[in-house]
Image (cartoon, rainbow, N blue to C red; front, side, top):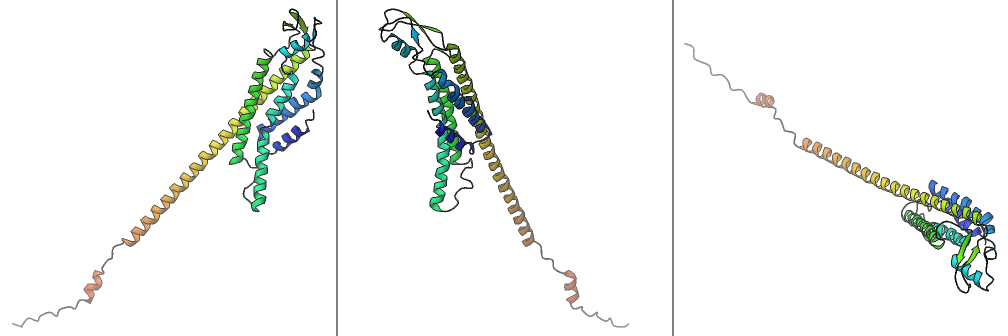
Length: 264
């Protein structure tokens, strides 16, 4: 199987991710994808041919293998990698939609088409939720299909057309168990990173909204205070009393001549 498309997808999402998201991409690419391609495929390469039962009844081994391994563990691992990485494609598609929209209208519609705000922020949150759900779902599926995260050396099968209860032997059980534990550890690590990034983005968005509301409230209060000060100054100017100059009025009043008394 060629995994070049998944590699290109992860490298494309890398420039739009946060710091925690880049750590998640590194874990997926190095500890899951490369380990799968380099080692895991070879361990499960001929698992059905190497599955042996102590009965020569035609069809017995095939029926028992299908009963204990309804889907190959390595193929389920590959399906998990694809499903977990696919939600990141939503982010790439959203950025491409923004670019095409700016080209269509021939003007700058966004501050940056890759900035984590508005609809792209919602798309990123949705992709994180889907990735976390897929991780948890596949862990539960692994546990239910194989009765735990264990690969036994011997299994007993009594399925038809086996003549009786036969012993079947699984090839490389210890090596497969180690890889299965590795799958569980990396999946849990990715779940923790997804939850941490989800919490970080929501907290950052909540903090930004609170700061914007506080800033608007402070600006509104300052505007109201300035208006009140302007009104007070205007009222004071118009309400100033008009003083009558009493001294001038007295000076302009003609003085009456004094009556001369007759000399006695």
